[in-house]
Image 1: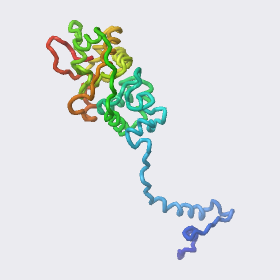
Image 2: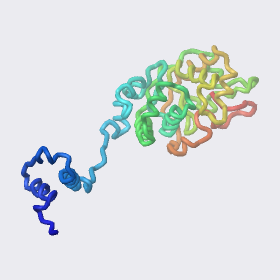
Image 3: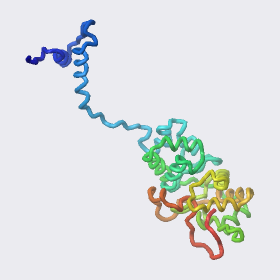
Image 4: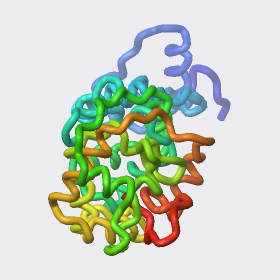
Length: 277
């Protein structure tokens, strides 16, 4: 048997290539001959290598922050943290100017449950590791907002600058800096909303936040009264500081640093105890 362009089902391909329309007789619909022709028509498509789809809403950290990326508009960062990453002055912290590795680590910890926050867990779980890196780098590059001057707060200032050696409380400044500027291992407190800082101390105390592997903040928070947490949060919030001094930690190094959050001690006077703030 010789096979020619007229041999079924090849004559169907010839007609298709010539742009000729053809419809099989009703009686042949579903027959092996017509089904074979249909499969042959699909063969050219199997060799096509379509370019990968690039979601425009996940192209950069800024687009993720403004669009919500894969989480949609409801997950857009700016809706809570402000158009410039300045925070909302209450429950949502400023992100502008924070270390990129620190920000990435927090997103990881919201996703894995070491920081309990339903809304942030939902957002973090919709972001890939690459998306988290992009959005963290975007906010890290923004200039920190100007904080309002600290209000007179003797109790808060004393705890922040001197601590309480009798109770084993080192000054907050020993880790977070005299001006609340933080460093590569400890986040800045300056310019963060006082209610947010107070809620974080409460979260440490109640173990709703567990991403301080050395346990410093948990111990510190449990030695402070509610009034003291409010006072030191108010004082720290009003400090004015720019970016943390020195080279920023790399995201990978920062995320794996067991001292992450508030546990890398600065040199401080003898007689003071464990670092924190």
